[in-house]
Length: 271
Image 1 (tube, rainbow, N blue to C red):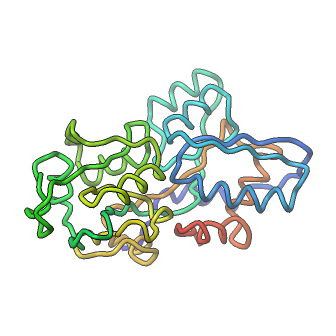
Image 2 (image 1 turned 180 degrees about the vertical axis):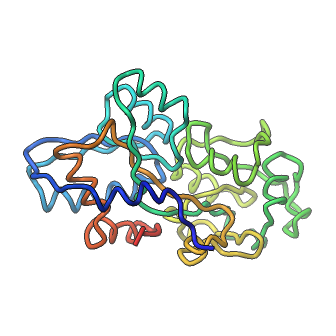
């Protein structure tokens, strides 16, 4: 069955009205997973509309949504959906957060290229991250200790991993927490015994992607719903977007403009 996350959100694309762009600026903050998409789209947008300046920072989905609530960013990148408590807090401060799904992604477990393991089940991943599997030999790998790399709790990627892999069981205290997807890539690429997890846009030759339950994480398995750790990626605005922000969101969602950069960034476009 094909994924049909947030049909109402996707439908927003068809009712957005393009507004003229005036000289101004847009601030974007949040998820390091969505960051490569935002950077590529913003670069193309500013070339087409040089009168608009866009500044982008990472820091995690939670931090981006907090900045949106505080009114210090125009757009919050998030690799998870906003929590009820965050919506409540935002409304209390005078603005309803509006979600826009901008891409699809899947979270892929990764190991050092020298590791002989190629596939893990969801149960094996859960056991590794709970600290129950301490040696790679237990899952068909080398006789070596498992070094667990995880994202910090402000990360939307962590929250999706927590929901779909850990199933609300806690990652064991011995895991090494990283503040960004780039930091996970570096940590795994430098340690032959490490395991981590990344959105597909961050996969490169410095790490080895594992299949999960025998299924590779790619565009086809993400859209079909076969890959078990998949998700939509979001941009949130503080209330219904207007002016430059509205024009930028339209650009991101345009199949012939922003969406082509989603694929260039390594993620799965909406259309």
